[in-house]
Image (cartoon, rainbow, N blue to C red):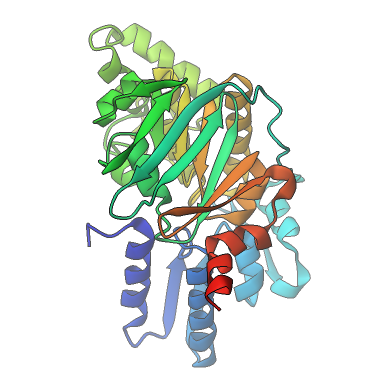
Length: 362
């Protein structure tokens, strides 16, 4: 099991849950790691279970899913009951407003307007057992998205860039210069940052406090320099204020924070490290609507400051909302590239399923 990706683990967990002769099935964020194809399989299964008289409690931050799969919806905010509605009485926008307690506005990214010649990160002809001759560029201050189905190779590509995965062939360039990145420590020294897809498994030390987690990378990068309690505590408080991390104090254990605040702590350690290229793998997985909007705002601010952002996401609305350009992958290959003005869900899925190859084969 430990060798499976997060999405594959999720499918096994779902299979385990439905294998029992249950009368009530509770699903807590069951689609958080799934792409559209796997989500549809799950929804068909839920409809089948419901038809057999099994009651299903479906918990999700993806509001369209609630509309698609549920008969009735209950909204909670800060531990209190806000509303109970029949699903035909509300829209996804209504639910978002109830959850946040204020009007929620949706935005869509525009095309990158910065210096197209200021290439900050370049990947050339990367191949291994999964990846097949992958090349791309991303400019300083650009927000580049990666989309695709489970198994497309997006996370594996990011692991190559960050030195976690060893490619057979290929090269990584930082600001036009070849970079030798054989380990995560090499990547950190090259001013790269990587917020991993599973914050609890590889992004945070849950039993340690906000202060230690926020300063962890900079302590590794500059040993001895920032270990003074006063300086590191000032860093922590600065990140708490900047990212609006809701915690009792810097001494609170990260494991006791909400998912959104955990994600902000995971981000804070890379901001303190001075990362100039920041890879965010599934940055809002399991994060509520309000925290999601806050994270999007932080990402845009970082890009405005010149930080290069690469986002891997299985959430198509997220890709449309935040990314100025999107690269789509299928089975280890780049199959499409779209600017924000060209983006829609149909085009992304066209490339994600590699329809053009199927059409040629036909």
